Image: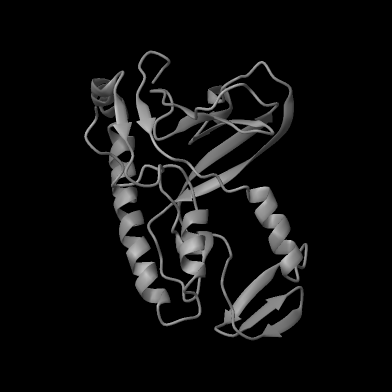
Length: 234
């Protein structure tokens, strides 16, 4: 926190290689690019004037009002490290920055409501690429046979959405879909309330977080500001 205080997390991290996933999906599926597709019914889609009928899974983006956060990420040459570092700054309410070392590259980025570029950690390595975008902070919304951002099942603090896609993809187009959606919706709704409170009390909350300075916290489940994140510090 502000490079003055440090909290450590004991957690097993599994990272999904999104680039390889998208390549695999494009090889396994018939993909049309670019396309402007519109779901016009439970079993019909219109794309570039062409009409398709069959079972439809809605994987479109969020539609409607939202609090939008901006994110930018630099890809650097690899660094010699095996720890993920997250930075919290009182000047970036509701946001954070990160450094994620990988075998083939290092990811350094920032997320927030404004001026996110200034919070990106700078590394003394060659830049390989830059990417970014906007992420909605919203309450979940039921979309029949929907997956991804259209449902609002996006981890409120970090913007992670792959987790809900993986969960829903196992039950989409089955009677179990609604039950799984409600389960995920309950968790994300709680995350939304927690994050909204955190944004309103940002400096005060960071002050309380200093009580954990130098301590190690055990993560009992996935590390994405999950509402069940922490066990007793030791």
